[in-house]
Image 1 (cartoon, rainbow, N blue to C red):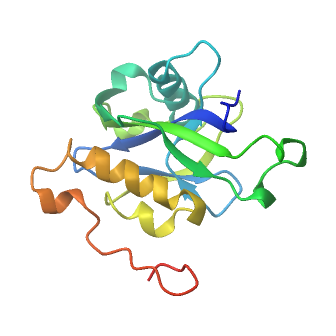
Image 2 (image 1 turned 60 degrees about the horizontal axis):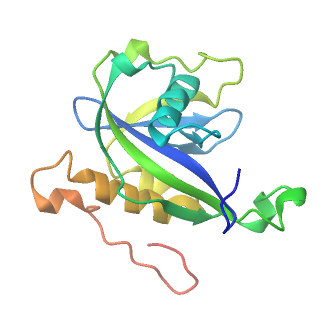
Image 3 (image 1 turned 135 degrees about the vertical axis):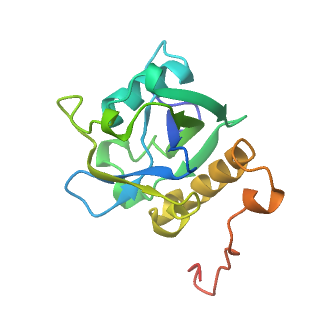
Length: 177
């Protein structure tokens, strides 16, 4: 299901523990790490999709988390053409996402990466809040930064803590330093 501009509606999940560290999942059989995310099915609200994806990817139920916030608007990223299936290349541009910030109120042991027959992750860890900006795949980095900055107001009282602790300086050639 794509919108008129070619973006697939999707939800992203920033799950934090009591130390405001974020859940970071390693994609199955890959070396890349990311936040849980997934598509919104026809007839689902973003919140319903978030709870479904939370269970499918992380094994958590609504009683294991508390919603702290969500992004006000859709955040979009384009997927590079070489990552897109050939049959989708004429219509698919990328993802548009509503991001949720959740607090784990359950235990770490409630996390189950094998809750469904088709797991997304084969490992996970807690990371400091801003660390994912250093290691997420490049084409998602802008959306991750937008989401983390917008959601940080729900976690951090001091305004200086609501921005990445380092400037994102882009050098010639488009590489962040």
